[in-house]
Length: 384
Ligand code: COA
Image (cartoon, rainbow, N blue to C red; front, side, top):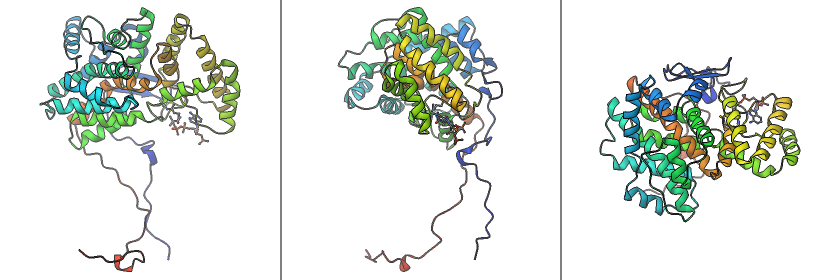
C-alpha cells in the first residue's frame, strides 16, 4: 500500500524562507548592496571608525561627538581581563584552535558576571560592550601566550583597532594598515540573518542569556562555510605558494569540482557588496607590506573563477591575505571576524528579545515505522 500522507513543502537550509523582520541591516541582492541602519557600508567604511559603527548598530543612530567620547571611554575601561580569566587562558592547551579559546573565554566571562540574567536593554547593552571590549584582549593574549611571549595589557589611549595591534605586536602599524584593519572590522560587523547570527537569535528565542547566545554564535562562525572561510582562503594561497602555480591549481580545482574557499555566497549571486572596498585596501596594504605575490595569486584565481564558473569572491577572499600581510596567524583570522561580529550578534539578540517568538521549525520523519521492543531480533530482555 502506498503512503497517502501529503508531504509538506520542504525548505532545506531555510533557503528562501523569511522568518522575521529586522531593522538592523539590509542586503539587496540585485544591487549587491548592504546598509547598516540605512547607511551604505562603503560610506561608513570611508567616513567612520569601528566604534562609531558599533554605536550605530546598537543604538540605531550615529553618535554625536559627546556620545562617542562617552561610549569610547566606557569601552576602553572594560578592556582588561582579570587574573582568573588570564589563568584560564594560560591553562588551555597551546595547540587549541583560537576560536575554541575565544568561545571558552566568552563563556567564562558569563560566569563572572553577576548580572548575566539582566534582560533589560541597558543590561544587555552593558554585557555586549563588555564582550566587545574584552574579545581583542583575549585573542591577543592567547596569541602571545602560545608563542611564549608576555601578554601586553590594553591601553586606554588607543582606538579599538590600534589597541588590538599593540596588544598583539607591541606596535601600532602604518596609518593605512590600521585603517584597512578598521575597515575589515566595520565590514565584518553585521550581515543580517547569517548562520551565526541566526544561531544567536535562536538561542535567545528560548530566553537564554546573551553570553550563551554569543558562545553558540562563535561555534557557528567557526565553520569553514561561514567565518572559517577567511582562514581556509589563506590555506589555499599557502598551498599554491608562487603565482606561477596558481593557474594550474585553480584549473585542477574546477576540473575536480572542488569548493574554492572565499568564493560564492548564499545571498549575493552578483557579487558581495563588501569586496570592492576591501580589494582597494588589500592592494594598498600589499604595496606597503610587499604583498604583491598574494595580489597576483588572488587575481589569477578570481579571474578564472569568474570566466569558468561565473562565481565572484566573497568578503573572506580579500580579508584572508590582508590579515596575513598584517602578520596575524591563519587561525586568528576567524576570531578577529568574531571580534567585529559581536556587535551584529548582540544587536540581533536585543532585537529578538524585544519581540520574541520561540524559533522551532518542523521536520518530516523518514525513519523506521513504529515498532515493538518485544519483536526486535537484537534485543534481549535483561530486566533490572
Ligand atoms: N567553489 C566552487 N563552486 C561553488 C562555490 C565555490 N566556492 N560556491 C558555489 N559553487 C557552486 C555550487 O556548488 C553550485 O554548483 P551546482 O549548481 O553545480 O550545484 C553553484 O555554484 C551555485 O551555488 P549557490 O547556490 O550559489 O551557492 P550556495 O548558496 O549553495 O552556497 C556557499 C553558498 C557560501 C556555502 C558556497 O558558495 C561556498 O561553499 N563557498 C565557499 C565557502 C565560503 O567562502 N564561505 C564564506 C561565505 S561569506
